[in-house]
Length: 131
Image (cartoon, rainbow, N blue to C red):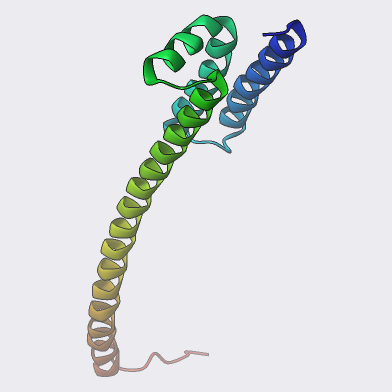
């Protein structure tokens, strides 16, 4: 790797890590998801610092160029992220369905309680002003 590529890659990796930390501090990124993104940023730095590992992995999987290996790793990370988001989305969908059903049951019981209160109020004599 050329010196400029190393410097640019390190700057981008550190920028990603700082961005993730800042988003967590501001509350715009949940801690549950920050680990994934911190792993991506650390992976970016690791590839730059240990480029020989990338070359070794490329040889291991039979890739001609390290860029091919990076592309495959990027696709793998993207697929894993989609899987994680699908799991979270499914969990939220089940929770919304459960809460909606509970709300419907609570609203269904509420008019019955209002009718009992209305009947009780009808049986009471009206309050009179003593002026």
